[in-house]
Length: 599
Image (cartoon, rainbow, N blue to C red; front, side, top):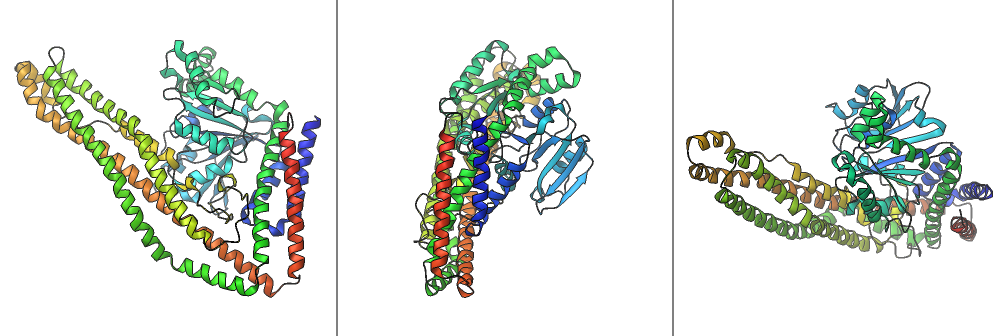
């Protein structure tokens, strides 16, 4: 109990100290502080459900709620964030992106209207708040259902990322059929563990696709794959079938609930968010967030001190330089576009050559299979085995080349970010304090740029990140293999003629079908890569402009202060330096608390 009290008093002290020096902090640090105050005063315990797209997160929650309420089978761009909390009456509050709140009747139809309405723009929506009289949500438990972490929609990704730093625990949903991809490990490391989250429950969904005798081995393999990322902590993994779990919850079939893994999931979730531990877990999470807020505030103060030491003439000249740079956007964009176009052509050339080689090789293999077919149902061979060969070939290509393609696009992203970052750094040579806060550590809203200290533009600002590109490429494997035009006549032709004649008739038809199927696959892969390269350019340019506008505003504010200042430069420097010393001492104390046993 003493440790919990120390953590709690530490949070109160830091919030008080940050408020005391609020005038020296920028917009991001102030927003982090505002959210910190709200959550410190709240009795809620937030569990966020995360996972890549199509992992069955909403169906999993429907099973836990024992009702088919949350929309599923939606696209990434229409999926809405749903915040579930306890309420005596069923309720739905729509939180719009412009800050408005609207109360509606809660029903499955009303929730699905946000994914199905032709005139609904997802960019207008912030999140949906759902109130339910559910035992699951008793005791202040709040569950956040998010779209896939590799969601291709900018706004959905940003809003989802906003909930992670405020969470007290996470349910990370994987696929039992393809457990723990590299992209999932990256998200775990850079977004969950970096945010200080330690309470994580892993759910391997679609366990019904795995033989029951192999479930124990599945758990072991998943745990072994996760262990290095968790830095020695043993992961808790629960195999689960959300579809069967929902069916068992609605029918109250206990045997089915146990077979689906629902019973085990309920126990694991209860342990993850057990009431007796919530205070200690929440206090530690708040303390970690205090640390990040302090780092952001310290960066702002150091930048402010650097500005204060410049005279009015220097500031005016710097403002003119920054304004000129902002007005020169078209020229900078054109230069960047030419360079990216060259790199894009190189990447696309490699991708196209590899796809063309795969197409040629597969056509030869299909025709060879036709030639060597001797017995059995020729119709079944053409109708099932050939499409299976095509799909397997596409899958093998994706598995073999996704990593290298993603690496090329990521390298492009980093080079663009680095180049623009170096250009940006020329405008702020004296405004880059040591140990500046990483952009990835900042709680963001609509990607506001307040940290102007970084020399590079953070590489993970691609639209959906490497995960999105990888998933987009994998998705092309499941494009229906259509156009096997030989099928309609094969059965009859085989009956009326000998096999050799049927083969001869099928060969050109199948070669053409393979060509069309692989063209569809290739076009999809190329479109995915092309889209992500465009996103690299968009994200880097947008971030650069945001940083430049923020710098312009900072210099403008400093000039205004100088012109109407009531304090001398020495007084302002003295106050800023005092704030710096005070917050650095707070940071030292917080890090001591976090490092203490049980802290």
